[in-house]
Image (cartoon, rainbow, N blue to C red; front, top):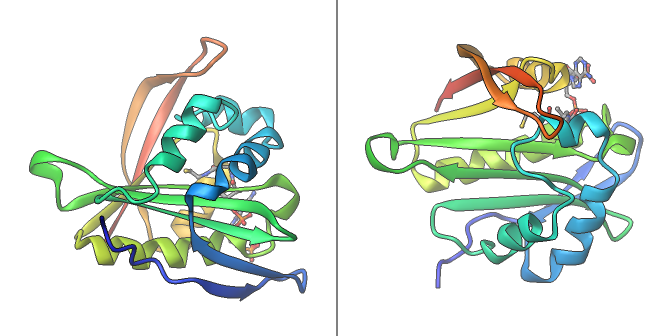
Length: 179
Ligand SMILES: CC(C)(COP(=O)(O)OP(=O)(O)OC[C@H]1O[C@@H](n2cnc3c(N)ncnc32)[C@H](O)[C@@H]1OP(=O)(O)O)[C@@H](O)C(=O)NCCC(=O)NCCS
């Protein structure tokens, strides 16, 4: 069994509320499904993983102790209000990890994203990677804004690289940060 290296912490948000930042656990299936249900249509369209799918949520929760994958949630009022993950790539990119960051629409612009990002950067360091990347479609302006503010740069753009659940194509941006 893999020792989980993500520490639990508390964050005071800009709206004065408190959130707990902690590892995703096996008991979080229902709460993570509920989190997925209240995402915006654009979030669902632009995310690689469908957070409204039972199957995807099960895959995430079942991986809570995976060796090369760390998943962190933000919790307030006994609800999951944010999710982030870092996963080490394989083969000749095993020194690189990719990140996902997602915050509940009702809690955006309160600092949840930054609090989760800090925890997930610590998790990336604990995985021993040297570089982290985040992929997002060009339309995800908030994602680009927060990661650029955190020091990431756009390293590449792939044209018409993703196809959303309505069949529309999007350009994919790859932002990176060298640890
Ligand atoms: C991107 C996302 C995670 C940001 O979460 P958040 O909790 O709102 O972020 P924070 O409150 O910590 O914001 C930190 C900073 O990021 C920038 N930012 C965040 N959202 C922004 C937006 N919509 N427009 C412009 N800047 C934005 C700002 O600089 C902000 O600081 P400020 O509020 O003091 O101006 C959230 O909007 C989200 O879940 N979006 C959909 C999913 C996504 O795009 N994920 C990224 C790719 S995986």
